Length: 155
Image (tube, rainbow, N blue to C red; front, top):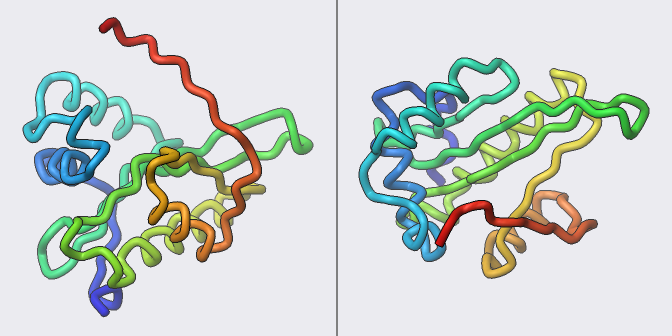
């Protein structure tokens, strides 16, 4: 298992190319992400990096970026003013899946959410990601809601 050698840290500017490659190395991601960073990725990275309520995490194994996720902290009035943690864009390198990296990154994120006083951790996953759904359910997540999206991109 590689997870014992996984180092979890905040993403750095120099990681951007590796992160974009992780997003694109995915059946769904390859239709919406590019293999190389451009201005839009750079701008998004800068905004995330500047906001303490967003943690762009990388999991590094043997000197290689093997996993990533975006952990965001969201205030709310519901649930008696509870904060919640939102996990987005979790990816593990295709060749390294099933070795515990995703679970290690998820565990770190859940612990950080607890440390920050969040009442719950939530995430969304594309309906087509059956393997990811099984992974999240094994980790204790429950499919409690329907998700809806409205694309604002012009065709």
